[in-house]
Image (cartoon, rainbow over all chains, first blue to last red; front, side):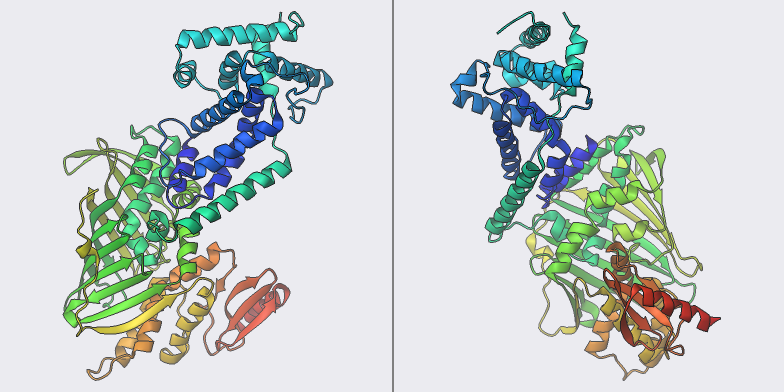
Length: 181
Length: 439
């Protein structure tokens, strides 16, 4: 995190190329986040790329009140929301069976059982209602505090906590095959 | 039903690693956007603080306070034991638009002074990042009087001007764009410094009251430290360097820097204090522009171009063939070189009618930069080596100085200053042969 402050400092002082380092540092986290939110690798890739190109326009005047990762996470979340709004079929968070979360990811464990579980997880995530999915994904992949998620979404912390619990419960059910959507 | 923890753990296993072609695409798009951004902003470019402030060694001298602090503070990024949030201080420094401060130093062994003489110098420095300019009013007490000068670093013009009003003279050094950019990218930026300094040990000095203000300090000691930081302590002037930094606990801004340096032989030493810091003060533009009356004489002009450090060093070594009978300085530290050439020049030009020409003065100005140039070769991975401590013009075939000019080729300068480009294998033979000759 402290390294981030230095990166931002450099970025603001005539060194826009440090953006390449920032991208390298956070690309996997951000792409995972975007894929989990959008369920479409190509669209997620575009969102992450746009986040960095937009950031470049702030060179010299980027002011962070929180962490760089938090800023990037929020940017990806906003980008994903714009996509969702533009594509109403995703608005309710229902992903088509034809558009599952892609399998280009790499899990740390090569065991077949884990792979299978991850496939199930991807499908299950795509079936969560978008508001619940967003809370869950921001919490797990963005490591964002509930309070911050509430602030970002303009809702109460209790609502965020409820959505998180619902999301976890639904996910658990789906992964156990108890809910068929 | 699975426990929530298991779901959480499973989610954490899901990682989407970008495809190589995607990586390539994003890097390409960022590079393209940066190029467009820089191209579009050229016409109305506000001087980038970092690039402009690092334009020259002298600039770094003036900017040393900010740079040194940023670098040293960074040491404590991972440590909050002192109660100071050091990272915040670094960030705060990055937002500073102007600063003024005073430097007072006692330097023993200044070139041209008697053995053991301690020179007292003071500098009043003002830096405006907004206006892209630095002014240093210097006072140097030497045997027989006080020398006063004003140095201006003008970023827009890539030039450093030093005016000596008492003598109605001025000097000018132009820094090439390439060198300027190179220095900005590699030489002084805080991350480079941070990484370099993190490799060194540092110690917490704890809390102390300075001028009635509570301050926290840290100390860094390392022979190579000076070369990373600019200022008097750069350029390989001293073998040992220690820097203490004190930060005002309340405002989290630097309040004092103390630096000491010494040479191994004990002939040169330095004690320096930076204080009287004033941050974000108003500076009238007129104070940052040199006004040189028509009757002032331009004594000499110098230039430092990137990639020519080796050749510039050879030019400095030629001075020793011309004026010191081919007895080269023992090392390429600025102080050593200056101390070796000063007595012979003083002797040669002691007569009232004798004075060095402009061309010679321009070459002598390079002496001041020789240590920096050598360390630039080191930093650039050019694998330089210098053997002036055992090679003179009397050993014309011995290797005096060499550096790498490409992956497998070295430029070798022999005792008689003849030059040959050789392979790495050939260099090994030449250096082995040089060693035999000495024995």
